[in-house]
Image (tube, rainbow, N blue to C red; front, side, top):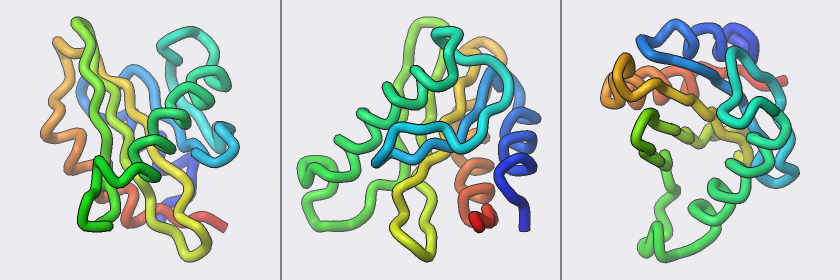
Length: 124
């Protein structure tokens, strides 16, 4: 089972991957990063994406039946941002953030791979 570094390196192997991180959405801190950051600052990106993840996870509008949110996708003219929530034994407050180039990336493949990585990730 992969740890944080191995998980992020696997995410970066996806076609079109520009950057990947594991973020704690309660604190907004990056627990690990690989590649580029959309705004050039991994910590600022972690804090900004944590706000989005927190909103999606905590508001019932996104999960009216109380089921957990699996992922959040944000599209821009030149890229995709995929946030995949990671279930953990403790409080499940982390997510994987993958930034993909829109021309080179495959959003469907990225969703499948991130789901697998999230299931296998070992957080100690």
